[in-house]
Amino acid sequence: MTTWVHRFDPPAGTAVEDHLRIAVKDAIDVAGVATWAGSVAVRKAATPALADAACLGGVRAAGAYIVGKTNLTELCVSPVGDNAAFGTPVNPLAPDRVPGGSSSGSAVAVATGEADIALGTDTGGSVRIPAACCGIVGLKTTGGRIPTGGVWPLAPSLDTIGPLARDVAGAATGMRLLEPDWTVAAAPARTIGRLRIVGVDLEAEEAVDAALAAAGLIVSEVRLDGWDASFEAFEAIVLGELWRAHHRLLDADGLGSFVNDALRAGSTISARQLAAAMSARGEWRAEVAAILERVDLLALPTLVAAPPELTGFAGFPFTAMTAPFNLAGVPALAMPLRVSADGTVPPPSLQLVGPALGEDLLCATGLAIERALGARTGR
Image 1 (cartoon, rainbow, N blue to C red):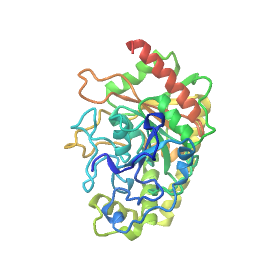
Image 2 (cartoon, helix red, strand yellow; image 1 turned 90 degrees about the vertical axis):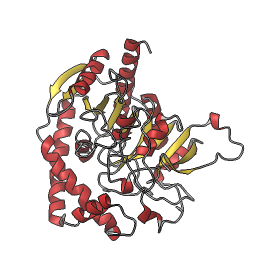
Image 3 (cartoon, helix red, strand yellow; image 1 turned 135 degrees about the vertical axis):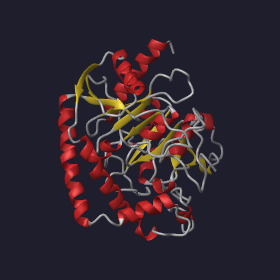
Image 4 (cartoon, helix red, strand yellow; image 1 turned 30 degrees about the vertical axis):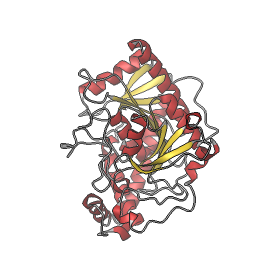
């Protein structure tokens, strides 16, 4: 296995071409199928799910065809996208580079055309990072907006579910599957707060600036003073909640060393440390909310640089641009921009960040940017 963990035949008499093809990350329960969460240790004791995860209600109601369950990094922990036990999904844009994780199989299924829309989970960037690595669109939803019942938890207070698609229109369709009454905003954002983070590759920064200019958006420079400090609170919450949810898996037969080490680290997070991190999160959420009262959306790259090679990803800061927005609980959209000069690496990815429940404005703005870039390149 690489991209897929399970493949499903279409229902009898179904004309597949008349139905949306949906890929579901194997951290999300599908009735009658065991959820393995990318782990041999989990697979050994897994039994078929008695019901779909709550987030699949709209998928079923729309008559979409779930084509299969996709591979992921073990227990959703790593942002790389690799999986030693079940195989690493191959990045179709750059086979020598990481696919991004943890929703790696979901991104690859969409990027290769094997699914129209995929569902993934995002706790620190796990929808946006693989979308950026594979040159597609990924939408992280507002914390708590989409129910997570029946979804494998990583850090329950940070976990979100979101769609991946080839373009923003597809991501909007995926959002409607998750929340059937949801609609795209009537108009794009008027003002964009341009956030610049130290250490980001110049090509990525220039691509973001060019895209905003092409769309004719009003841009002003902004800063978030609590940015650097947010990572300490994020790490404490992720590790502390991982331990509290899955401590029984520590040293389990078949568990990978990366996840086992994360569990061990989580065991050191005391209740007092976790409470302090939650308090810091409240302050960070207030800071992000305040800046989003001054501007409609924030804009910055999704990754600090092009995705690294499979043989050289150690030390790459995958979540450096994404995790703070999980901590803030706000939605974010990742979308590809221009192709790199030599065409051998995935294009830079723009990340748009909105206020809580602002997915409608994110998609309207993403659509406007896509139109502007298409007009500029003649696509």
